[in-house]
Image 1 (cartoon, rainbow, N blue to C red):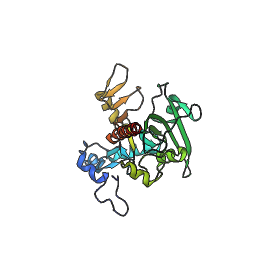
Image 2 (image 1 turned 90 degrees about the vertical axis):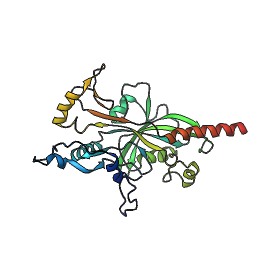
Image 3 (image 1 turned 120 degrees about the horizontal axis):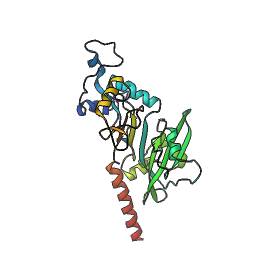
Image 4 (image 1 turned 90 degrees about the horizontal axis):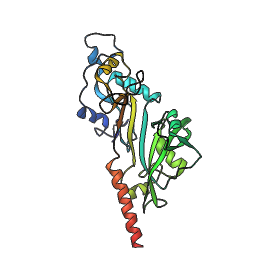
Length: 286
C-alpha cells in the first residue's frame, strides 16, 4: 500500500494517509512549543489527520512512524534528517550470501559508533559493512546473515535471511546494496532482480522494517514532557528508568527513547518453511 497518493492520484483512497484517521484516535490536546499562546493554542497543535514522518517503499512492510501533532512531526522529521533514528530491516535474498571473515567486518561497538541500530555490549556478533556512494551521496549499511535455507528456485540452491541496519536512507538503498554489491537481490524485487524470478516466487518483496528506536518527541524533547516523565516513569532493577515496555531512559541526562519491534511477517516464516520442504522433497525424489 502506498503511503501517499501519487501525483496523478492513481492510488485513490488506497493509501496509508487515507487509512490513518480511521485507525488512530486523536491525541490529547497539548500546547505547541512553537505557539505564541492563546486560547486555541492546544487545538492548533493537533493535526487534522495523522502524518507519516518518513517513507517506506510501497512493497516494503513493517514499522512506520506516524505523528499526531505538529510538534511531533517537526521533531521526528528532524531526527530522521540528522540520522538519530536507528532502524533495522529483515530481508530474504535469492542466493547464499556468505559473510567475509576479515574484510569489511566490524564489532558491535564499532557498528554502534557508526550510528546504526545494534547493541554495543554484544561482543560475540560481527557485522559486515557496505559503504559506497549512491546518487552522489554516501550510503552505509551494516548487515549479517541469520539463516540459510535450501531452495529449488534460488540461483545457487539457497535463500538467505539477513538482518540489515542502514545508517543512511538513500532511495532503494538496501535493495541496491544487496543486488549491486553482492549480486544477491531480495526475493520478489522486480526492480533490481527480474520480473520472471519475482513471478516464480509469487510472494511479493521480502523486505520488512522490524525495529526502530528514536527520541520520544514529547517526553525527551520538551520541558513539560520531561517533568511528566519523571512523575510517570520508574527505575527498574538495572537502574534504567522505564514507562511500559517501549519507553526507557538509560542515563539520568540521556534521551527518553521510544523503541518498537515487530515480529517477522508470517509470509517470511511460511516462505522459508515451504522452500525447505520443497528442497527436501526434491532431494528424496532424486
